[in-house]
Length: 102
Image (cartoon, rainbow, N blue to C red; front, side, top):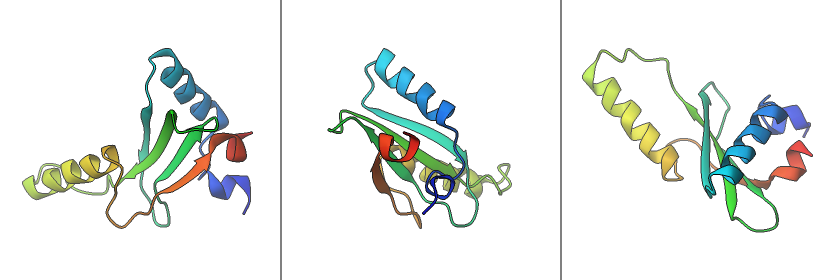
């Protein structure tokens, strides 16, 4: 699989910026959100040999009318699942960040 396919076109600069935040604020769990489209799934990248600092790349469906109460509820539920490491209809894979972003 090509690198662009593995990282959904997320730039190396975005990942380095998230690593800088994780390091600066000693944050072990970090989330980078992007709009969802067909075929995307949550991906978790761990830095170093352990899992002391991880960046989860999540995708959120923004194709809904947020003035409707049920859509707000769905959005809240979707965000909750991403934050807590699970996501409906999306599987999560864990990779070492250096394997994808060098």
